[in-house]
Length: 50
Image 1: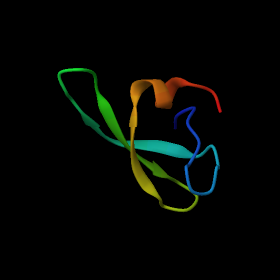
Image 2: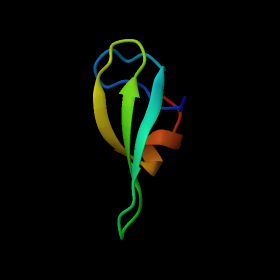
Image 3: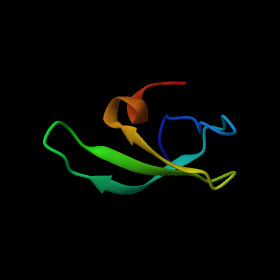
């Protein structure tokens, strides 16, 4: 679980599916446990509150 909120349902039940290593920082594939929505996020998106 992360501190991020789902972009679709705004629930704070988002887990990391995959980590994509890139030259300018890692990207994360995340999935909402509540609604199943999958998206990509940066490290800052994952760690920030709300």
